[in-house]
Figure (cartoon, rainbow, N blue to C red):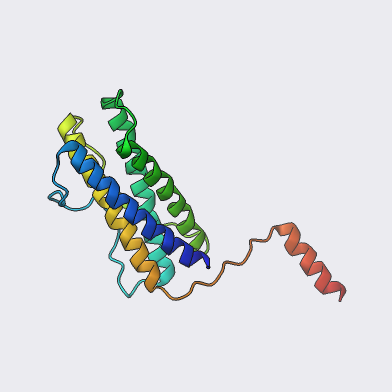
Amino acid sequence: MDLKEKTVALARLLHKDCTQLLELYTTRESLPSNSVSGSQLVSIPPLTSQLSPSEKICFLHAALRACLRLLDQAITREDAIFPDTPEDEYTKQRKTVRERLEHLVLSTERLLVGGKRCDAEAKDLVDSEAFALKKWILQVLQDLVYWSNKTAETLQTLPALTAKKPVRTRRETRRMEARKLRK
């Protein structure tokens, strides 16, 4: 299995885990699981056919990085407001999602060509009131479900990616040039 296929499989697994985490959260907080009104917290330009495969990967990577940052904020704020919450299925699943998301961010980064970097916009929490935090965490989890699925779907449709050439140091390049001159 090549890196792209492994990344697609990881994105699918993360999507399943995120869906389960969202269900656990909505049950725990007695919130509706349907989308919160308004747009997503994380946004990138539309992944149209005009974008190259490497640009699509770059924007997906940026969206996943933004999701990881938001998830870290959500965990920190949730743990600060509810510090004595015993570990349960939700907190275990949250930890699993966070670890897999971090791994998916690294995997998509390895698919990037030429170290290209793209940015995603992310809406941070504005109101620090407990109910506003719960609604914002719900949106973060909904974004995780959306972006993990979007990553799997998009990567699946991309043509086979060529492996990146190993980066050579200046010293290695000089040695190779010296060998060519000797021949």
